[in-house]
Amino acid sequence: MATINGKALVKDGKPIDRAYSNGQLVYGRNYFLNSSGSSLDKWVNVGNLWSITNDSIKGKVFTSIPSVAWNGGPQNSLYQRGLDALNGQQVTVSFWAKADKENAKFHSEPLGGAKTFNPKLTTSWDKYSYTIPNLATAIVFFMAVDVGTNYYLSNLKIESGNTSTDWTSAPEDYI
Image (cartoon, rainbow, N blue to C red; front, side, top):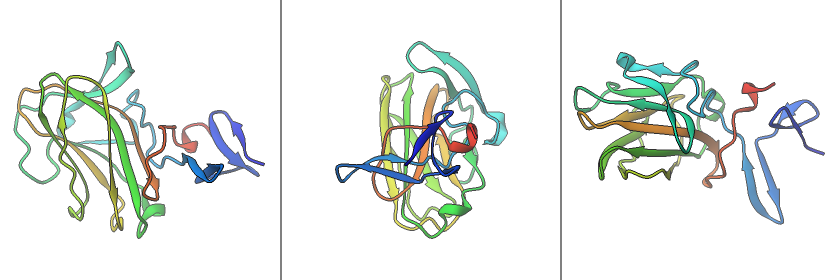
């Protein structure tokens, strides 16, 4: 039987990757560490563009205001190494985001650009997700694109499979 151990779903002392209820996926293990937006620890913050701020709805979140437009490469990005356990698998990336301007351009992709995701953000918190058919690298980037736009990110998640489940912290954040 699986139990909650300090907010992580574990069975026999080991994190569980997926859980189902009545045939429906209800939990997918998050492989991003410190993904709530409360700490930049474990994240690579290119150009020190990203910081932490308090949001009235989400609490502590990642934020950035680019001074240079993103036009490819890792500039303006936040990413995390160490996703080796997911290499070669189908994965789903999800995150909550908003900007201080409507239709703000945002970009996310795995290293190498095998699958790109370019949502236009609103000024309200929305959940975004996309599936990468075969994660060939152990890095997924999140890029702020527009100069002078304030971007906000929270509850970033990468999980195996093609279904986005509710955000949970990584088990390693607690055990």
